[in-house]
Image (cartoon, rainbow, N blue to C red; front, side, top):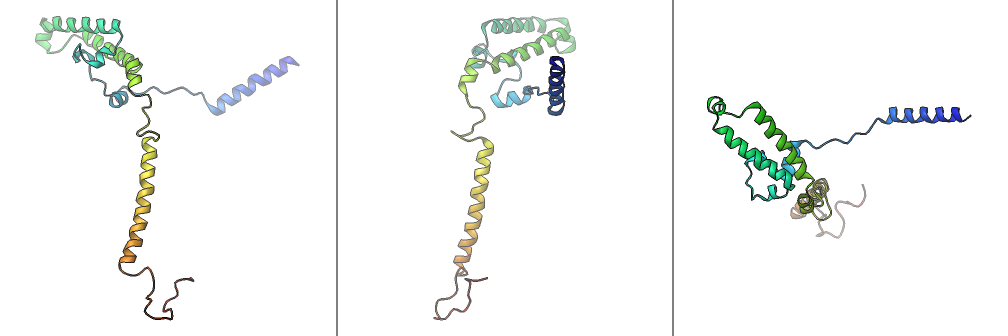
Length: 172
């Protein structure tokens, strides 16, 4: 009896997961995150005194400084003089440092505290809410313009010069 119940439960869970699918959170693309928070293209070219660099953990800042020193040494090498760029090993170190700095910067206390509600554009509304509010206002203003235009040309009501109505606008 217990075995049947356990099998039924496993089958129902499997059926629900197949129908609903597994939810995996999507990661924010680096380029999207850079635009949102205005992260630097490359962390190795940021100055030591930059507020963005200061927001990084101390160990990562030390690694970044060490990488900068290695880049300066590499610029004096024959490889750099001949090819005009860094060795593939150093380029991969630069790329991995940029990724590490991006991830550390995104979860930094300073960055999070600087904008606790990044989705909100005003005190209570997102960008989409503001857009919809504007659309409603534009719609109302367009209808008001038609009313004002009809009033300007005296088309909003029949003439009152005659006691008898010439045109009855009250009924369809």
